[in-house]
Image 1 (cartoon, rainbow, N blue to C red):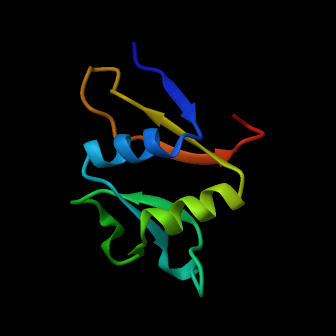
Image 2 (image 1 turned 120 degrees about the vertical axis):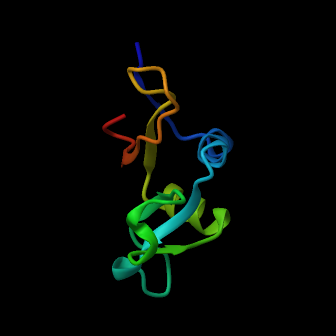
Length: 93
């Protein structure tokens, strides 16, 4: 059975994303001089027009400032690699 996990560990988040070829990103329409809403951008998904790549340093600076946690899934119920992830408040974690 697959279950969602939660972490605030930067290395764990980075390894999970990179294992799925994901890169740190922000939603273009929410970014000004600093990153807006954080996302993990996966190749082949529809974020090309709406997401802007950022560095892992920028990503984790915003992640920590906003007191976020990373909710994610290792595999789907069928046993396939999952790309499900979501950013939540640490208070919700």
